[in-house]
Length: 425
Image (cartoon, rainbow, N blue to C red; front, side):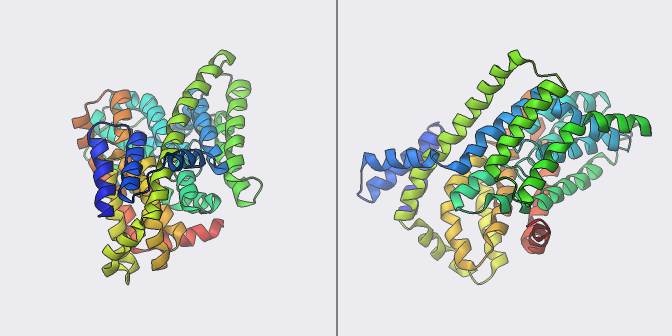
């Protein structure tokens, strides 16, 4: 009955068009009424406690860093570097989009910011070169979701706080799986573009490549600074976010000089608006999370999944299927906040490494950003790339299928995640 109340209230509120944060509060109220423990103080205390978390301080700074990179020219230089390295091969602009997605993922940690930047920069170039607009937008949307996988990652921060896990370990464990997702897109783009008879741009000379690398040097240094700092304990993920924001601001204003002092206020406001949405979601979700624990909802879910408890691979597959289904209807952050307190007790009871689960969980949620009908990244790319949602859904499915196959490989072969993670930890 508790599961019915939980799902019924949440889905019912969403069906009425209620924002996710308020739907979570309605879900909490329904659980309180069902448990006969109505108390307004519980809501107030959990709302306050939900946002009162030091690791969550990383979110506004990474949001700010992403805004600065897009406005201050760092993102543009990353695309130029990718163009210089792989733009000359057959279907090269597609590989540029994939390489740029991986590089940008190591800068901002936001799928929406990365997809918006790449759509604005690359879609006109790809269409001008003769590539199909829908397929080009689909590739960029699928590449954008690498942002929450390769560190720094806002998704890992939210999951780490919700699951009480080391965010540094999650960051470092996400590096190789993020690159594997990128390789899956390379294979998918090769398959999609194999019949296109388009002349690639001319190969750049060694001097031009070196000049482009020199111009993008300061942008390329940022992921190395973050990974090096986390690996050797120089700073925490929260402090890394501050380093990221300050470094980006310095490079954009002082070195590249593309961000005017007069623009900084607008950048701060844009980052603050996005941060407010995320923080309110986290605060509202903690109300439901606390009541989920009180109602022993995870225990009831464990009973439903009992037939799979003896086989870790089947259990992981079953849990990932649940996340895929939920991801079609909900955005990434609320999905993380709702499912983490439900699934983590199952993971721990089954003896599955929580870091391994966390990486696959975030990858799955990231793929949910390009699954209709919600598909936040799809909506962003459709708007920026000037393509209809119907055409974009047709263009994105080969790449989404490739990413799902990469996820399946990581479920079947856990060493693909855990062995590379041990290299960094």
